[in-house]
Image (spheres, rainbow, N blue to C red):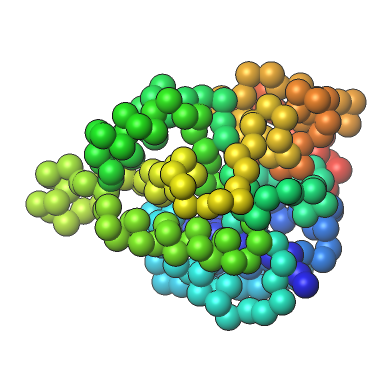
Amino acid sequence: MNNTILTSAVGLQWDEVQLFIRSLRLVSNKSIIYFILNKKDNKVIENLKKYNVEFYFVEDHRFDIQKKRFSYYLNILNNINNIDKVLLCDCRDIYFQKNIFDYFFKKKINFFSEDYLIKNCPFNSNWINKTFGPKELNKLSPNNISCSGTVLGDIDNIKKYLNLIIALSKDYPYKKRLKYLLTFRRDKSGRGCDQAYHNYIVYNNFFDDKQIFSNLSGPIATVYYLKNIRFNSSYELLNNNLEPYFIVHQYDKRWDKFSEALNSFRKKLNI
């Protein structure tokens, strides 16, 4: 059985991808990695070929891929065999400190929370309000934000999760502002509304065997709202148990705290 990672790099530059892939291959040479890309992403494709990855090509614009990626993930998983665990993740703002598949997950699907309540985040609140409406926003708002940029589970539960995201996005489309409806343009405020569908799934009873990990002590750090940022002598980010996180996410939003650690890590990876 194989562990599989699915991510999208449509419209990204190589400098935005190489920390992800180099750090991943430093901790694991065995994981199967699928990158969703546009064939116009020539430089990224050329460089990724060195790291034993698979490609899934689409023609979408980078502004549209954030929501469409879930359908593509499902297509990929429906066409490959012998999969054990699956990690769905971003790549532009993630690096690996350890192999996430070495962590002992007790549940069949795992979600990862941030150190901030939905009601205190204007972005997440807006996405939920503009998809599910104020009643569901009121219900979900006391919960911590869960980030759709990292989800890990077994193949059956990940497929179920993807089917739910796809169905919800059709049943509860983001309500564009009027000027964008009239001009048939993208409403930029809707980018990221997959967060609404994700949190709706996380905090409702769709999965019997799930775990929602704390950002403070779990294996994945989503650092935008992380209060205690501390490193060991090797510049590994540590959780509240003083253990290195397996994955660090959104480090670019806290560059003031991560610049020294990332510079050291980049030297280690010859970037």
